[in-house]
Length: 299
Ligand code: NDP
Image (tube, rainbow, N blue to C red):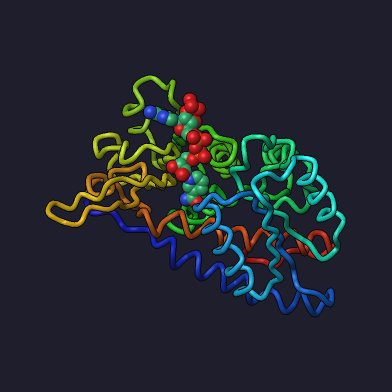
């Protein structure tokens, strides 16, 4: 079998278009456009790239984008004061504090200072609780993007066996909760799991969110399974005689697993583009809920 390659880039672009298409109706109803404010502290190169991409995507969708760039020695008190001001600003629908923060700042104190109704990353403990309790709320972007891809490929997920490798608060745990809500039978695996290959072989849906390059091999995967690779790992490019350099790979051995799986996301071009698209979606949803409007259907 050769797996269908799931085109996350195309799905994400279509979602971004749907978000952009819904902005004029929100503007007509409220007299303003939805607004996303991103806060970045320090000079981390990867974070700077992500923040620029988020700003550009927000503007491209017709929403208001503001970025606060703070120096690396910003105090926690000053950052918390900014978050408090953004919470009170009516023009701000979504607040995203780019992680990681410098070591002298307590990340969870900052995240939990964000108004949960503006927490478009879905990391606030209130939103984690809402997700766990099956209540409406803002859901972390990456796992929600994975769920959208899975439903696009498989339709109804009810009754399927799902294995999620990874139990972080931002990917693994919310992913497992979203799949549980869709009536999958879910196993969460992690670094202490015994015989991980055997656990993975049970999965109709296998989600890898580990951060270990090409760890999941072909003989870990049930024939026909749908494999979602969240991992982003930079490794040396295997380029004999070439100029060297690096390349991005996922947690899944794409070449090997493609011969066994029914469908698989590539890295890059799979889950990655979904994260920003869902961020825009969450901003639009937050704006509607704050304005007392029903979020547009189909998002
Ligand atoms: P974390 O480091 O927070 O969590 C990694 C998880 O993997 C942990 O639960 C850990 O287990 C588990 N793990 C580590 N080693 C093994 C192993 N050998 N066997 C089984 N499980 C193992 O990572 P994140 O959840 O934040 O991210 C995971 C990956 O997803 C990273 O590569 C990250 O870059 C990527 N990512 C991609 C995004 C995207 O937009 N595409 C967005 C967010 C993340 P334990 O809990 O026992 O330590």
